[in-house]
Amino acid sequence: MPPSATGAAVPVHVEPIRAFNDNYIWCIRAGSAAVVVDPGEAAPVLVAAAQQALRLTGILLTHHHNDHIGGVAELIAACGPLPVYGPRDPRVTGAPVIAVGDGDRVELAGLASEGQPAPVLQVLEVPGHTSSHIAFHGELGGEHVLFSGDTLFSIGCGRMFEGTAGQMSASLDRLAALPGDSRVYCGHEYTRANIAFARAVEPDNPDLLAWSEVTEGLLAAGRPTLPSLLATERLANPFLRCRIPSVARSAAAHAGHELAGPVEVFAELRAWKNTF
Image 1 (cartoon, rainbow, N blue to C red):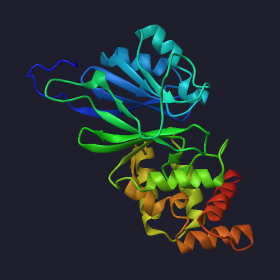
Image 2 (image 1 turned 120 degrees about the horizontal axis):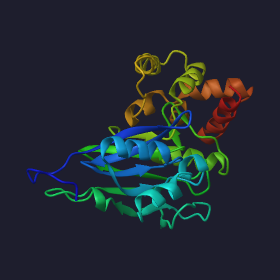
Image 3 (image 1 turned 180 degrees about the vertical axis):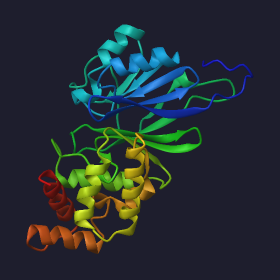
């Protein structure tokens, strides 16, 4: 267990570890113990661990893309055997994986402390970006958290490499239905570019304009734009707003014809964003 001089519960919090050009590896900490989410490369994790005297106790994976799993083997080699939780997909490699699916609960046993049980996250299957993509949702340190991988970004969503528009739309609807105070920890720093597209879709959305100002302030200060709040995403992310008339009208105008329902609106938005 993480040490506690007083025997009190050790606070749990989430910190970013930057990787590649724009990836985030999320580090869930309780004292000196840590679980990392989607370690696409090992070096930044090992540097952070050395600088902060962290002990890695587990790994969570949302999908099989190498920029999310590429560091697993090196971390296992450096830190010893660790529980690695990921989707049921043979493409998730680097270490033996404890395969989890919809409704499963993952106990982060290494983050337990005296007076505080191990945090537990629920697994949600959210196909679309990949066919086996999962997300993790739960409560950490008294806050709702969502590790959404590349399904939901701040003011955006992932490309559909394997899934259909119907699958991706349903996955985003499912995430949008989670508590609004959920902090969204996604896999990439794409917020500024996503806002530029969202403003093309809804140029007069006051919530989007307000989040744009916040984003620019954070980036100017050299800080991550993440996590965002799910409540903010509902108000400003066009991919969660396909039933909103202003969004549907913009998508139809771009398509040049009427669109039959939110899935067609989503599909048009995603195609538009792909070439924006």
